[in-house]
Structure formats: C-alpha cells, structure tokens
Image 1 (tube, rainbow, N blue to C red):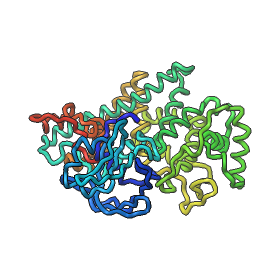
Image 2 (cartoon, rainbow, N blue to C red):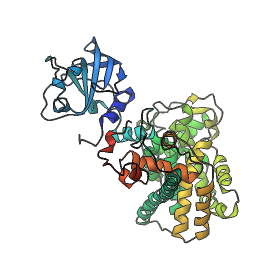
Image 3 (cartoon, one colour):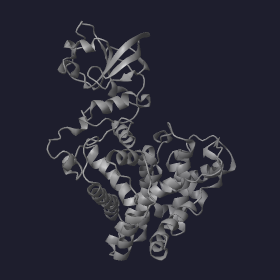
Image 4 (cartoon, helix red, strand yellow):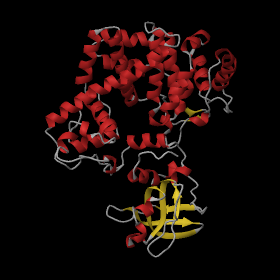
Length: 464
C-alpha cells in the first residue's frame, strides 16, 4: 500500500472505531481482540494507557502505541525508553520491507498489528467520514491562539463562501463538458436535467452513499428511460433494478411483484449497467436514512424531472417567485415516493413512521449544494445577469443555513457564528481546504496568527 500522508492522530481515530476493521491478527499470526482501548495519553509516552487486549486467548493489561510504519518503533528509539516497557501492543498502519520486531528496554518482544490489512472500507472512504465528523478533541491549527479582528474573519469567511458556490458550480460544469462531448448539446434541456439528476442523487446519499448514487445516476439514460417508462412504478422498477435492490427480494406483495415484473421487461430494452445491493451502505444508519428510502424518493424525483418539467419549474420559478427558497422547498417536499414506502424502510421491512419524506434538512442541503450552484452555472452559461445577481443576494442574506459537525466545531474555534448561507458554506470551505490541509499560509486568518512563525507539517497539530 502506498504510504499516504496521514498522521498518528488520524490512525488513532481509525483504531478506536472498530467498525473500520475486523479479524485482527498480529504480524506473527496471533489473534488480537481489543477489550478496552484504554485512555488517550496527552503527555509523553505511549498513545493509550490502561488498555486490555486479548492475544491468543490470554488477556494483557498495559499500553498501546500507534505509529504510521512498522519501523517507527526503532526510529523513535522507544526500545531505549523506560516509559514504553508496559506496551502490550504496537499498532501501525503501514508495513515495511525490512522490519525488526519491536521490543522494550527489557528485551520483551511486542506484538504488532498492521491495521491497513484489516480495513472493512477503503482508506478514502474512511478519510471522508472522519474529516466530516470531527472528534471532540479536534483542534484547528490556530485554536487557542490570538485571532485577528472579527471583521477580518467575517470578510474571509464570506469570500470563501463565494468561492465555494463557484467551486460547486465548477463540478457541474465539468460534467456538462463531459456530456457535451458525448452526444449532448449544452443548449438543450436534457443535458441540464441529466446533471441535476446526477448531483441531486449525490446529495441524497449523505457521506456514506453519495458515490453510489453518482454511479447509479450516471448509469441511467433519462432520454431512454422516458421512452420506455410511463408511470412512477416503471421508474421505481428502473431505479431499484439498476441499483441491485431487486435481485434477491423475496417479498411477493402487489407492489414488489409489480416492479420486479416490470424490471424483467424493461431491463433488456434499456440495457443499463446495474449495481449490486452489497455496494450500498446501511451500517450504523437510522432506517429513515436507509438508501432504500432515498432511492424511492429519487425515483419520484426522476419521474417529475422527465414527465413534469421539474427543471423548467426550478429555473422559471426563480424569476417569478418572490420567496424562491420557500417555493423550491415546497416543490421538493411535494415529491412523494410510491405509497409502499410510507410504511416500509426496506423491501419486506415495515416501519413505525408513516412518511418517506427526505426531511427538511436534506432538502435545504440539496438546495444549497445542488440547486444554487446549478442556477449560478446556468446564469453564467446563458448570460442571465438578473438570475446571477438575485442568486448572490439570496445566498448572501438568507438565514436558511444548514448546520453540521464541521460548522459547529469550526465556528466555535474561530469565534464566528454564521448567520447566512454564504457564511456557513464559507466555514465548510475553510475546514476542507485550509484547516485540515495545513494551508495556513494561504488563509487570511492563519497568515495573521502564524505571521512570525513557520507552520510546517500542520497536519501533525490537528487531532482528528
């Protein structure tokens, strides 16, 4: 495995979250079971103290040391340090070609686990989840230091909010370019419907299923779908069929039997690439957020897009509706999945709740992350300054902000609470492209905080 630029704090977050790995074995082949991760050590010495680990059926009590690579034990000269004599397990992320078994100053050998060999998910997916869910110990590089005046912070955050809108519009534009090179015309409605379809789907996937939604929506040709699909049941059969959800469904009720029957008829005509249900993530998700419910809504969204001019309503409503945010919210709330999903959260699994709505917070995030960037791109592409100016006004003044762990943590640490969409988006951009990447020298806050010092390898400062 290529040695990525990840630090010991990041590895510690993986280590203390058992969902990320399973069936641990040491380099020597011993079975490793963690009974207690112990207490995180904030001082010098091993990373975790008072841990309990079962090794080949025998329980050991002591410390755990975390490293990037196998050879770091020797490099850091822990074998000479008496503080490491109580280490019972050495956890590393990367292997080394040449490695000497770690031992204490008393020459006691220590079992080593190479964590990357036992991951249940890709390191890319784990990275995305961790940076989107900062731990209580997370600290940005300038936390606790003297920050610049709040007016400077506000100006910088709003600038980043503007950049983020253009960044998201740029992602859509890249997709427009690709599609225009593959038999789509930029001036035609169908290319804009396709891009809206794909990225609205991504927004429904949360962090755990957005890549799956993008893959699914890329596989589905809306023009071809409109040719063969006439009602919502047809669309359900295509969405659930292409996503792989119908392959092993045993339920034989009217709705389920009908969509399975229609999918068998439509599949050879459409010839769409299909996915496997195993690609979708359900683990540690509330039933309301299961991909099955999101797909049910997505199917109805696709139906409205193809049959009821949803894209046109989004564009024309921007000029005609005084309260556009409320208008577009109502438009999305009025999209209802098939009745079956009002009392099911998966095939054959009844729910206690009676609505398959995606929820107001998800609608708000979809408006901010997809609809607004699409409007921005559309206004620039076709030179509609009125749309562009009004969008910027709403973006800069509307208090319809969304919140998440990133916004909460960063706003607390820089002492700035967002009050507009632009400001909340600016805080997310600050976190994603400056704080966690150590680009303090390019940050208007960081360059003042660290003006007299050199910030090197800032990622070592951050506790994930």
